[in-house]
Amino acid sequence: MMLVTTSRKPGQLTRSVARTLAKAFGAEYLNRGKAGMDSVLGHAETLGISHVLFVWEKNGNPARLVAFDGDWIEPEIKIQGIVFPRKSFRGQGGQITVEDDFGQAFQRVFKPEPGPNQILLSRFKLSLINNGELLLELRFKED
Image 1 (cartoon, rainbow, N blue to C red):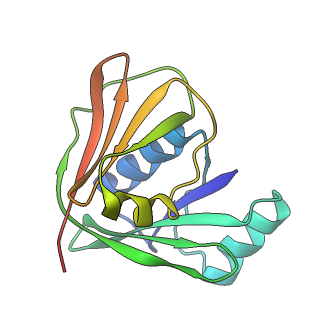
Image 2 (image 1 turned 30 degrees about the vertical axis):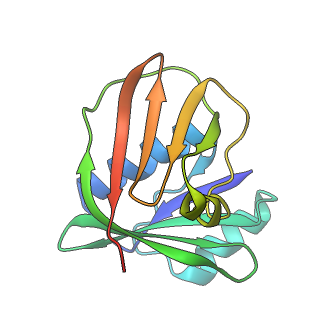
């Protein structure tokens, strides 16, 4: 199981992206607000969750995905762009399909529960698909 949360005092887009990721991965979502890191990790521990995905923002927009599983997991994923049609969907959890070697490294960051959503992961993007419809696409920056 995984917990998805945001940076402190997130904007609406960042919260929406984090909630969509949580639902698509079959994860818990925590509305972080002003809570500190210790509080977030303590909440995860209370739920019996060791894997936490943070959606950090910059200037009100999602900017990075960072995972914690007892220690920070590499690589940190930098977001360059977002396609977010804001469609409602049913079904939590999904199956990751890795499209290239770099996607293999990113796969460590995400821990989805089994479910009906298709999660495509590559060097350039993360796409969440439900019943053939795009739910969210995060385009990544290359370092």
